[in-house]
Amino acid sequence: MQTQNDMYSHHNQQILNRFITTGDYPESDKMLLREMISANGGFIATHATFSTSREWFDKYRTAEKLLVDKFKRTNPKPLAGDAVLIECANGTVYENALIAYEPNSLNEKFVIVTQGGGHICKVDQSPNESLKMVIAGGYFMGVRPDDFLPEPTDSVDMCFWFWGVRPCASGGLYITRPVLRWRLKQINPDFY
Image (cartoon, rainbow, N blue to C red; front, side, top):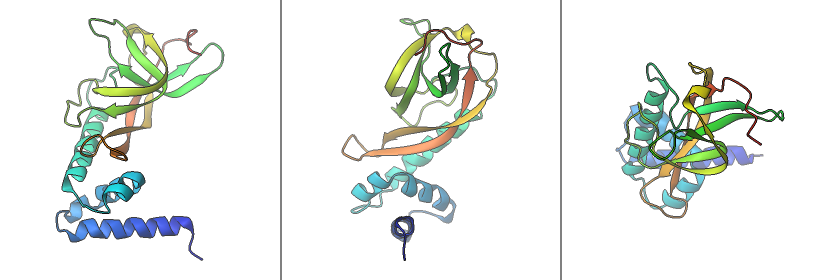
């Protein structure tokens, strides 16, 4: 008896084969193309029924390169798009808090979201700067730059998304990659 996972894998393989038979995707693209298809079921079900657009994959590959280069940057400092491990005075621990925004002329603190996700505004931005994102989620809080330990402690996988072509129903492509994770110097009394 065929399980739902088997049917899902078979369906993904059929879609992958449709993309490959176009001749637009060389062998070197297969693994990343397979990842894009399997990680974006809603997008693929909605849009790949009618198209095998190279534009989706090119954006996916550009986002992948951005996140990989951001993770491998030299002399890292906390940037928007990195994660933070936050321990609260009440015992709550946020292992995957996201640095949403860096200090700027309006705000002298990093803005951190404890449970949120990032929509990357443009996939072709500098990996050495804060990710330009739109953030959804909560709780938000400001943290001073000197509240972080001087080096990242480890890494964690984080999911980001961007528009495949333009804003539309099921039009977002999701990608998960490791990001640097920072830690605060002390237990934070202000988070919930």
